[in-house]
Amino acid sequence: GENVEQHPSTLSVQEGDSAVIKCTYSDSASNYFPWYKQELGKRPQLIIDIRSNVGEKKDQRIAVTLNKTAKHFSLHITETQPEDSAVYFCAALRVAGGTSYGKLTFGQGTILTVHP
Amino acid sequence: NAGVTQTPKFRILKIGQSMTLQCAQDMNHNYMYWYRQDPGMGLKLIYYSVGAGITDKGEVPNGYNVSRSTTEDFPLRLELAAPSQTSVYFCASSSTGNWGSEQYFGPGTRLTVT
Image (cartoon, rainbow over the protein chains, first blue to last red):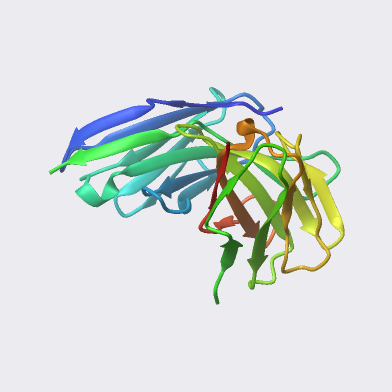
């Protein structure tokens, strides 16, 4: 099955700096890569996603890049703010053969701390 | 819309007891999922459903059972609880199971087995 590795496990930055979180996946058939943010004690929420036919996607201060050849994708947060402090999870979806749906495999998570 | 709701929020079980975690969604989503999140770890898929009456195993199904008699509800049953099932359980739903379909998560159930 799919395996998703996420690095680093913790990331500490100063307010205003950029933060980058990287994920690698094992199954070249995976075609959808969402990123979820989970604040302490809260539920995960989607912040950005990218499909396999796109190399980069941006939404204000966050962006995601995808390198299908190398099988890795990254989350970039610019001008970080204290409210960006949370756990971030990457995930990869592979549609099961002969079906129109798939299952998400999550990375282990990155604890991002933004210091004021 | 309430979105995805889960009950209870917290529960302490003794080893060998059983319980059902409830999950409901009011978004008319066909796809529903159960995940567990162990401390410092990502989410692992336990079971999922692609519609009423259709369920399938995820990555870590042992010790759990599910049913999907309606589109709205997707309960997770724990039989003979074990300490290894101590975790936070999240239910989620999505409108499709393919790319671009956001999974909406419930608030979670924190379960401790002692």
